[in-house]
Image (tube, rainbow, N blue to C red; front, side):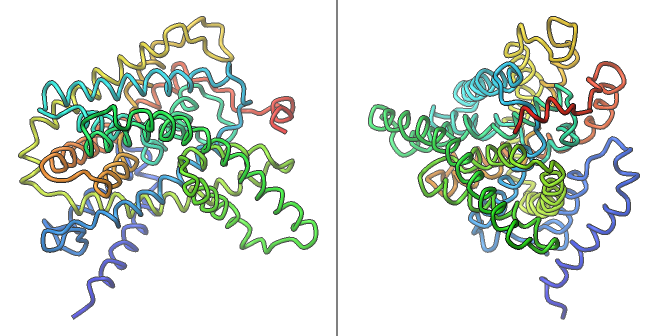
Amino acid sequence: MVDVYIIDLFVIGLLLLIVTLGSGWITRLPLSFAIIYLLVGIFLGPYGLGLIQLRRDEVFNTELLERITELVVIISVFSCGLKIIRPLRLGVWDITVRLILFLMPISIFALAAVGKLFLGMNWGEAILLGAILAPTDPVLASEVQLTDAKDKDELRFGLTSEGGLNDALAFPFVYFGIHALEDDNWGNWFKQWITVDLIWAIASGIIMGVVVAKSIVWIEKRIQKLRPADELMEDFIAISTILITYSLTEMVNGYGFLAVFVAGLVVQRSYRNHEKPLAQLEFIEQVEKLLEVGTILLLGSILLLKPILNYATQSLLVIILLFLIIRPIGVWISTIGKRPLDSHRRTLHPGTRWLLGWFGIRGVGSLYYLAYAFGHGLKGQAAEQIAWITYTTIIASVIVHGISATPLMKWYERNFANHKKTTSPTTIDEFE
């Protein structure tokens, strides 16, 4: 009898071989890699071969799901930071500010209202649902993000920077929902939430991202002058930057995801040899893709038909409202009066605004928030309801956004994308 673990390794290896060799065809189809991973995950789960099981004897291993999703998200947000070479000026980041400060609260509170008014949740549960589902996923949204560090397209930049910074405003509301579940008297903890979970955690995340990344780069430059590191090992500096930044930030109760994104921005701007961060980006993206495979396989393996059907009506309501109303209208409101960069237009093209609204992809980030909430007080009927709505919403996003991403982005590129992808020496000098 062959060990199940060995069979798992064989199947995952075979899957990687197939999608790698077939990537030339897959990228031409209205089909994402995540859809393939999801289907394979279902096949390996309880309805198929039963080779991957996070549920054993009615016990759900939420800690494993939390740790895996946590790792893939921190790597992904660092990758987002490395891709962005724009100057750190408010006018250049205007689209990001709008998507974070306006769109995120609109999405969270609109989803919370749906949970309260239509799904029978209390406000704590409803806000937690909104915080879990509002953020755009930095992992599965890679197909509509910046293609490389020279890509200056505004739509891709907006989605990339939004994915990297989502957690600056989403995580506080995850904590808000958890506090509300523990104590429905908001007055007992609201001031602490403002000072610690909102102000301190965001500020320390930004500061730690800058300080730790700059310190690592400074140490590396000094040591490399004395004796260069082995070229084969050099890319691991990026992994060490991610892990050290994240862990130190979490130790001081800051938002590690935010710190790692900021660290990516800092690293991108810290080398005179601009090929170095590009090499790190290539390595990080490979690691990210590998972890994405494992995460989506796990998602497919935990799906159960009965609870999905039990919450199907509620899930469908959330999906329709989120994908077709809340996100698109929220983006439209958030981008009112937005002037595009490098264009004679006074406002963003309507097509760009609608695509920003459509590509609010849900995925690994939402899985992490959900698993985190499981470990911090979310349980019982509320846990089941929020979990299956979340799983179903992610599945729907993987399918509809995965199918539509390729044709819509090709249409966008043909008609009104910003094709300026060259970086002038002047622009680079601004980063140093």
